[in-house]
Amino acid sequence: MNIRVRLIACICIVSFLISLLILSQTLSHREHDPEFTFDSSGIASTNGVYFAENWDGKGYIYLIESSGNVKYMLSVEDLGEKIIDGICLSDGKVYALVHTYWLDGNDLRAVYRLFSLNPDLKPTAATDRFSVDVYEDVKELTAAQGFVYITTIGNVDGAVNVYEIQVDELNEYSAGFSAGTHQEEQIDFKKLNNPKNIMFRDDSGDYIFVDAYYENGTLFVRRDIDKLEGGFVPDTRVKAAVDKIRFNLMQQIKLYKTYVLYWLGGLLIWIVVIIIVSVVLKRRNRMAYVFAITEFVFLVLLFSAVFFIQNYYAKIAKSENGRFASLALEQEFERLGDLELVDFADRDFYRSEEYKKLWKELRDFTDQRGNDDFFLDAFIVKI
Picture (cartoon, one colour):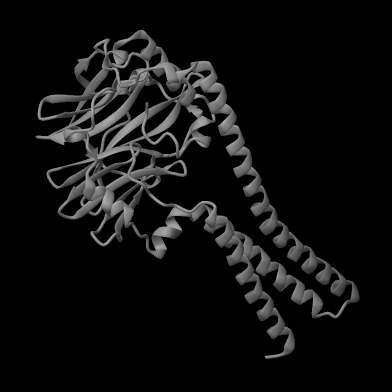
């Protein structure tokens, strides 16, 4: 092996190590540490714990063993959709409700599908696409005796609705449905075969419904004044499994596949450049040497700039986000007035118009565009 070949091999190895360092630094800012919160769904079973969450704008479903290892993992994108709304178990099958946003006129609206999965998270059947009222938030997914029930709460009128889907209506699953936010595609919502509404419960007027689920023919609701009890108490087995969750190498590559693809693409381009330069240098042209050295120095500077600038702007963004969050909260509390004068221990306060006004103000604040980016860790429980 001559010196030139050895030199090219050394450059390739050094380039690979530098690229790994950059990839590692990039992923350190996107590190995924799942948590069992209101926005996730989990069920303990004899097979382990089934856990569903949305991360980085995508839905995932896992089967977690008692040790914390993820045995099976399914990306909602593999089903042709985007976001996971909830999961439930019935007759040895996992049912998953997912949605993707489509254009309805000039507005984006959620379009849902219900999937039936094997215990190893392989899809077997699915409904056609359907919708519910645009002002309803899905709260819970339950199943029993050949039916799946979707419980929602209106984010304007506060009413609870229960929708019913018969399991026999699910069609054999076939891949090939497009995913993502369909920014340029319209869908005729009037032609969608929407599920049957079997129950409606209006806001009582005294309190606000914050959670609900349907089980064995009974609708259970939790008001803002109620304590967590019964079926609303988070399953400690699910939390214990999620706290210990561990992904293997292939699962981590799937989670970070966008970054991995960019890394592989950049590395491949760099290796091709090295090969081209080596061929040019073989002709011993002085201009070729100057070009090669210049390009090498330029690429080293470029890699260094990407590495340091990324860290610098990450620190700046963290500082600016913190400043924005503080200012936004200060302004919001100025608008709300002196809350020190409010007796939150008085149960009659939660029946008053003053409370409803306060609830609406806080709800509007959390719904403002951009606030969910800054208060992702603060608003763990919806108000």
